Length: 328
Image 1 (cartoon, rainbow, N blue to C red):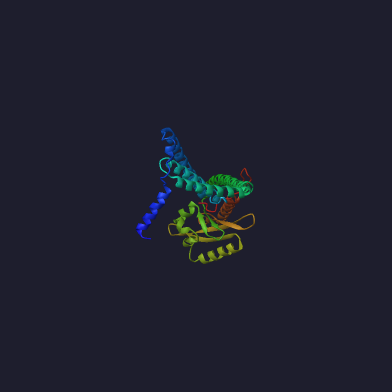
Image 2 (cartoon, rainbow, N blue to C red):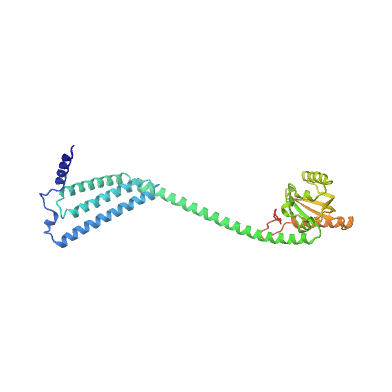
C-alpha cells in the first residue's frame, strides 16, 4: 500500500467514526450551558475515577503476588477502565458527532461486563468457600510465627540479663582472687588442661623480669636452668598425661640473672565428671626460707588457690560457677 492510499483509507475510517450526518448531543439540549456542563463534567470525573480505581487494583495485584485470584482483580480493573472510556467518549459526544465511536466503546464495555460477570459466577464457590479459609489460615500461621519470635526474643533477653549478672559477679570474684594471690609472697600461675600457662601473679613478673607476652604458653622455659629443664619438661608432661600432682625443686632465673631454688607444686582442677579443666602451680623460694617452712607455705598456698578457684559460688538461682578460664 502506497502512502497516498494509506492516507485515503485513514481519512475514510475517521469519517466513518465521526459521522457528520447526525448532530452532536449538544444540539439535543439546545446547548444549554448548565445541562452541557453537568453532563460533560460528570462524565470526565467518572472517567478519571475509574482510571484511578483501575491503577489501584493493578498495584494491589503487584503487591499481593501470592493471591490466587489476582487475575480476577485484573479482569475487574479492565472492566472498570472500559466503563471510564465510555464516559470519556460520551463527554466528547456532546460536541462532536461520535455515535460510531460511542457505540464501539459501549460494545467493548459490554464484552468486559459479560466476561467479568460470567467468571464471577463460575468462581463464586472458590471466592466464598475456599479462598477465605486459606487466607485466614495464612494469617493465623503468620500470627503464630510472630508470637514464637516474640517468645524467643523474651527468652534471649532474659538469658542476656542473667549472663550479665553472672559476669558482674564473676568479675568481683576475679578481683578478690587476684588480690589474694598477689598478696602471698610466692610465685603463682595457672595453666589450661593441656599445660599451656595463661596467667601468672605479679610476683612472678617482678622476680623474673619478664612480660606476659614472653611467658605465654610454654615461654616459662626461658627462666629455667638448661641443666634441669629436660627433667622438668619430662615430669610435667608425665603429670599432664596421668593427671597426677607435680612436685619438684629446681632453680629459676631472676631479673638480676642469678638462679634461686624454688619448691614447685602443681595441682589439677577437675570438673564434676572428673576431667581436668586447668592446673594451679606455686613456686616457693627455698633459698629465702628453710625447707620445712617452704613446704608448709607451698602446701598452704596450693590448698588456698585450689579452694578459692574450685569452690563454686552458689547464687540465688542455685547456679554453680568457677572462675573464668582467662583470669588475669
